[in-house]
Length: 126
Image 1 (cartoon, one colour):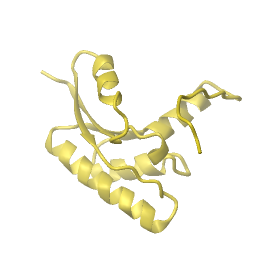
Image 2 (cartoon, rainbow, N blue to C red):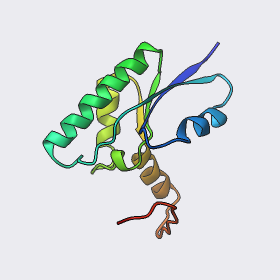
Image 3 (cartoon, one colour):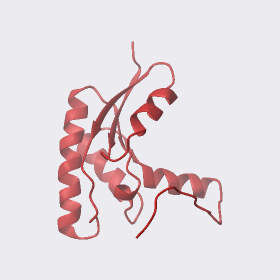
Image 4 (cartoon, rainbow, N blue to C red):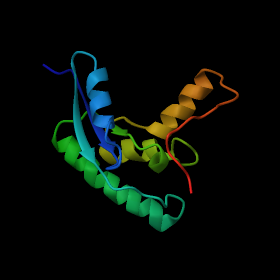
């Protein structure tokens, strides 16, 4: 019997996320997975509303599939200030704990007392 089920929401452009999560799950943890469109605008009220609407729909689907925790695994899409605004909203909207990639990164860097960060990526910027 599964003790915990993660509901993971990922962007359609991430082709490795589901596989990576699947290989890292500890015994007794299952994963429900769905994809959601990208949201470039999370700063304006209309942009935030569109993001919240799509997240609410994805979270409803995942809750119906038995998810106990919500995970928004989209780094760029989860960049909000303050960094816990989005996961706090997700937890309230879904009724279960929630985490986002961006908030988890900030929390980890603060916990580790990281002062400088270097980033290497295969993504090219215009």
